[in-house]
Image (tube, rainbow, N blue to C red):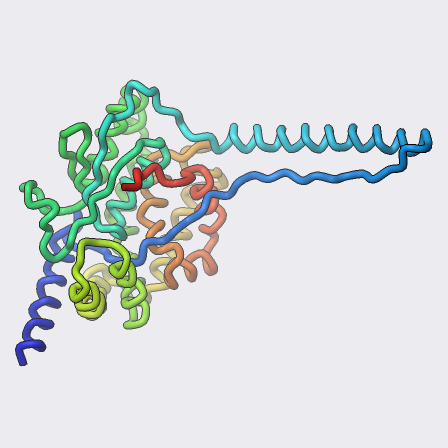
Length: 329
């Protein structure tokens, strides 16, 4: 009886933590996806010739010329690729000296901040917050994640964090982009007000997907051996029922259809462009990519890519954002 009571209490506590710990009154705890940057490679062709004839020498010379041509073409292709998808460099003196992100590994809002930091190659450390005790942020009056500590100053709310960072690392750009780009602002709001609400009903739509999303706990977070398994199964059960409430709250009748519709809406907004920002991602691109990144290799994310047109844009974003700038400790 005591064990059942403890499990019920844990489930209730976790459900409450999930609803109150994120920017929108709930936190998505899903499997963190690993992603890989695609590297541009080059091909070689070797010509085998005899040293005894002028024809062979001619073939050898032709081989050198052909090889040189292929190298030149390859370099040109790389230059074009870099020109189109190059990251925006941040001046060294504007890069913060110490950045620490307090997060849940699979929180979409936390991942939005990480996508920004990764894109701009801003090194950062991560402190994984226990969603039950929140002991890692007991020092803060603000009890939600993400919290980003930048050179000793705590920043809160993912969109506000990104605006402040943009103002710090590129003041000239922030005045025009953050304040005056109506298209970018519109789609950043769409991410926070609509897209994120499509995630939980999808990743927790059945028990198997709910358990898949909680597998990250076995390798992430500050949990004891017992907590890992209690939170995994109790959390999956709690979020399964929470997702049903979210469906009702946001008038979602078909989870996958709603997710697919959101993905197609985003592709339509691109209007044939590589990114919403044109040849380079803007803050809206980074926001969409950030919140989708944790689900990309879950069942829901795989279904989304297989059944919508978003895959090509997502791959471009993976390539341009590149590897994480997180400092491994």
